[in-house]
Image 1 (cartoon, one colour):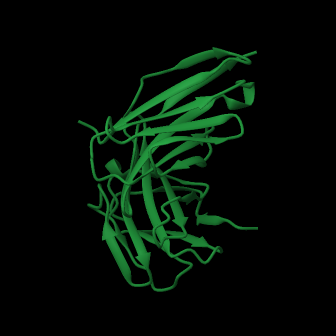
Image 2: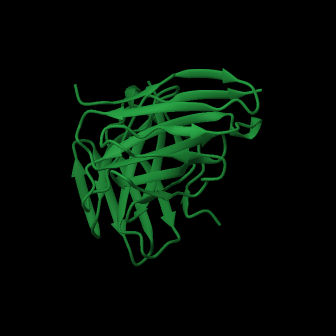
Amino acid sequence: QKEVEQNSGPLSVPEGAIASLNCTYSDRVSQSFFWYRQYSGKSPELIMSIYSNGDKEDGRFTAQLNKASQYVSLLIRDSQPSDSATYLCAASNDYKLSFGAGTTVTVRA
Amino acid sequence: EAQVTQNPRYLITVTGKKLTVTCSQNMNHEYMSWYRQDPGLGLRQIYYSMNVEVTDKGDVPEGYKVSRKEKRNFPLILESPSPNQTSLYFCASGVGGGRYEQYFGPGTRLTVT
């Protein structure tokens, strides 16, 4: 079992809709959680970090963390064509970082 | 401009020929790390460094070496590359000290024939 699992894609949403991405992790001692966006041929770009249970909002992005369920999610509101990318979930146990395989999102204009 | 740089960006080499991929950051970050990205396997951590002269293995360290003699540099060394090390490699850095956000370099595409 991979340490970090993401819902399989690809995910296609119409422009203006909400894209919902899910992630589970297996290591209970994981402390920090991140969402990265990776455009095709580019490097991962950090878009959200979340350390404690609950919701964290940043612009059109909301990350949710539930440590009891070992679950992290990312909502993208008012999706734009520029949001079309692969989204990587990552969990950190101190300095070791484990990534999910990614979910590819396509926003249809 | 705050950035992580890697060189070379593209490299084609032959089996067994030692190579070094350089990584440098100008943000005074304590933490640096190397990853490889393969289709279907995602990003996997090779080695990381918490500070100068302090390094540790990630999930896939076999066949790689690293050193951290200066805070800004963290080269990745392949002493005897093999075709299964053909991959896309990323270097990343972070503030450290309990903050684990990492910022990635542009990547190095390595092909070993």
